[in-house]
Each structure stands twice: as C-alpha cells, then as structure tokens.
Image (cartoon, rainbow, N blue to C red; front, side, top):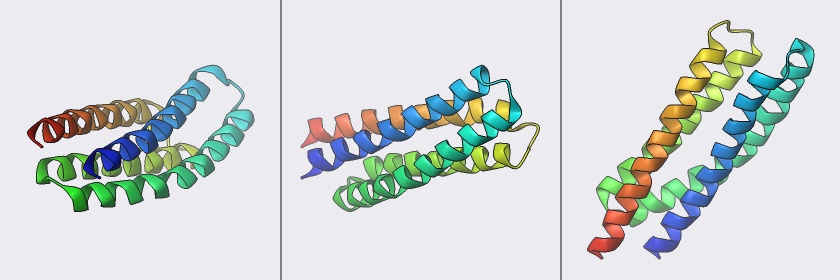
Length: 126
C-alpha cells in the first residue's frame, strides 16, 4: 500500500511539474501580453484541477508514513501551493512574478526530489 501511495503522489506531482514547465515556456515564448494572460489563466485552471488529486495523495502518504516521507510529501504540496499563488500574482500583474516563478518552480522540483529520496529510503527500510 505504501509503495502505491508513493507512486500515486509522484504521478500527480509530475502533472503539476509539467504544468509549471508550460507556464515557464509561456513566459519565454509568448510576447503578446493578452495572449500570455489568456494562456496563464488556462494553465491556472489546469493547475487548480491538478492540485486536488495531489492533495489527496499527500494525505494518503501522510497516513502511510513514515514521518520523514510524510514531511517530504507535505513539502511538495506546500511548494505546489506556492507555485499556484505565484502564477496568480503574475496574472494580477505583479512585476516580480516572472522571476519569482522560476524560483518557485525550482523549489518545487527540489521538494519533489527530496520526496523521492525519502520514499526510496522508506521502501528500502521496509
């Protein structure tokens, strides 16, 4: 059960990561502000839809444990929330939002990497 919970979380986290990649891509490749705003709104909607399954899978991992893996899973969820908030600030016209998004995206990927390591360690200990 624990392995399945870890794999499910990683699958949902991958979806979020892919959407963040699309946001970063839009930041670089869509020069026209109105088109970029439309794309950001579409991606924000997709991120909201992807967030709930991630949150559910994190809750299952927290239930399954162990504590280090649960903490790492929660950090992934928190980082995803930060990414979603950052995208919202970009949509609202925050001038620092673009640079901040890159930082938030990198932090998300680091949290995901720590979760994978914690999950691997937990599986080896089982």
